[in-house]
Length: 361
Figure (tube, rainbow, N blue to C red):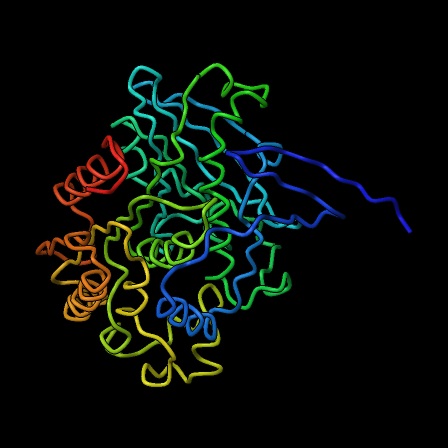
């Protein structure tokens, strides 16, 4: 038998053990809401099982391929980080100048269906750049199969039942990249070590628009239950409605390979056959503060269904004693993320992540 080979890396208080290349992670803090756990279990009947193999990402698994300096002295670094042994996730890391850094970070999930497929998604993720200009460290990972992602990688050959579930694991790994920022600066022999930027693990959020919006929701459902990957606020622009109100009631788009094929093969693209709906999924985020932008003229994510999601979640939050944790705007436009709405969402993050105290505002 081959000798056992162990490697250790300490990151944000978590010890990672690699045994035969399989990463073993400590269990995150369990959810205290059995009803939410049941909803997530029903979601997994469509998206596949969550394997919990991305609880931690060692700084040693991060590679930096290119560094450039943008206007306002923002440093843009093209990086990859490893979540699964056979896969590296390409991403853009935007680091503000030390004088402006506020100690907080935001995972930015772009609308990968609308951006160019021949470049890092961060090149077109406007909110990542604008948040970096406000002092946030921002990280923009590419979605499996898009951007600079390895086109030969097939998540279905790596024990995932959907690209959605693979993306959830990637995004949890991305949060741990941000939480290990101070370790990265100490360990990596590159430009990072000279920046001196520190990210407070208690000041991390997530934002997404369009396809990035629903991916932010899916990610937050699991991040909310894993101590090592927990975030403190989430912003969703478009990407949210009931299944009956999505795209005129047709779920065929959701059953494509880059999302959840079982929606078609097991549930006939029929909203009535699905074991979950989006109002329930949104409610599982309690007590996480949420900001939602729901355009009135969004033909894909109909605003009527979005209001139903919000109403349902607000009742769940209230039952658990969490009032006023969900903010929503309804801009008079199509599936867009207007500048004034972006500014309101940024102010929401400022309020939730830059406060002094132990409870969200």
